[in-house]
Length: 354
Image (cartoon, rainbow, N blue to C red; front, side, top):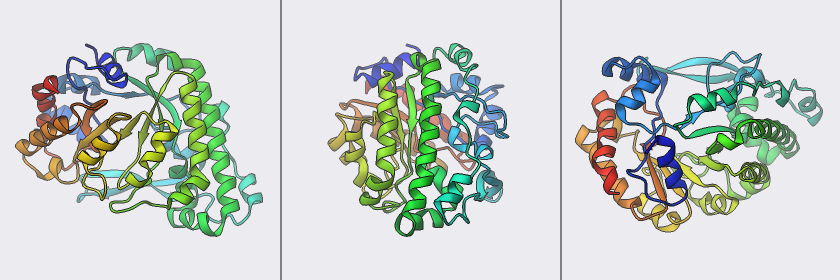
């Protein structure tokens, strides 16, 4: 089976020849893996590891300075200032938002005067060729991560404060973001919806121990916008890939009711995210993606620890709707090459039995 065929089988609740697996990693570890494993391209790396990579496509924007797939990270289009912040003693860098263009806004009028991007500015004309290039792989494009972007426009502390103290400003900004995301995603779906398996409808609702906001605030500010995007994506026959970090379990039933089809990244060491309980309560309704711990097991465990965790995940999700093996978020630069190889070797060794 091709990578796309494996994913399609899982999404319809069927059993592929083996459980599919995905790769998420920072630029630094991807470059190191290619060097260590003798691979000249990302595609060669996926083939070497046996990865059924979810290929994430995006239209280009004439003013974007970033080279990234992730529409929500086109910060330059939204006038968000960034800088590279090192981690792990300089092993890697993350592009962090440091300039928040709407941080000083105190009225809806100021929000309305902001130079909002036009969804028609993105060039979708090259996306059909991208789909043809990656036709053997599952494809994702479009979607939203509304509060993620809101926090970078306002600053994290101000964004959270707004939900209580400045609801009119929160509404004005969120409605603008949502309208742009919906219009752009519709353009993408009109262009290549027949080739996509997923669109990305995400939000980081969890910290390591709790929700980032109350369910009441989620329902008030985010749920209506996310629900409209989910309905739009489903109207084209495309599935919803829902990324949600951390301890977000209290919101999961509501998200399932809203129509998410797949949950990523399954950070099972966070409070309330135990794998067995997730499989028991939601395993008939959701496909799970991720679950190989990248906070402890992958960077600090042994290759045997990694193989053991893959086996555990396969056993837990074996008789449920579906599972895609992947690290629970990006592989970091401090993860040994041997542990990454062990992850994907274990999929080949044990995945056909799952």
